[in-house]
Image 1 (cartoon, one colour):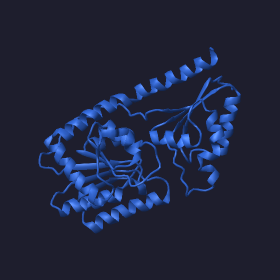
Image 2 (cartoon, helix red, strand yellow):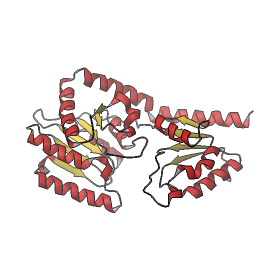
Image 3 (tube, rainbow, N blue to C red):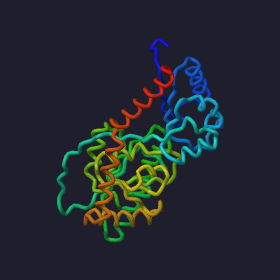
Image 4 (cartoon, one colour):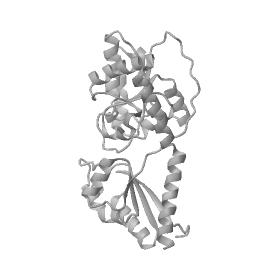
Length: 306
């Protein structure tokens, strides 16, 4: 009230809020005459989580209906909200990407290809599959180096996974091909490490997220990006290379095929790079933020200057 705000913008994801408190907050803002715009980064209920009322969108659909706009990142999100009876206030809105100018990287001509991944070190990110893929490619006489820029998240499963990845690399005899960065690094350092790679890989195995924040750091480097065929990457469309599946076979074979395409700069690589450049331009945070501001201003004018 003291700030005399006209519009409130909320960034929603499961676990960010107590849903009953959030619903009450939305009602208070609505009753006070303020516009509420909420960006929903996921709409897939994590059914394994308890208490159920805090992880089911149906439990807060009345509050969601009071929002002036619900912004989602995919058609699948729109359909899930439609199933709850929410359509009139729902709009598709892109997840932005930072504008980053990578320094030129000088590599030794005979050095092995470098692949890398980024994001918190969590089980669904497919990091174990990447370690096993490095082993598979080494066995096939097509060795690559792997750089894991995956910060340890402050939960037990993340700490355990860091140890498991190191143990797997040791067991498979590929420790000399893998370097791990598990500290939480400044963005500039993470982007520098990623920019040195020939191919950035996001080998997610499963997730309810609507769009990936981590892959946007990969896209920002202007390096080629490859992903598993999951809905979380749908908004990238053909601006990235896509594996045929999520298994170690799919990933290792895909890495070999994609690296060859990049090396040859064939039609697949050239087309993907062109579409990635266009995607970055459309999703640049400056463009996305202008769009959000214009939306909020338009909603305010429609409400206050009828």
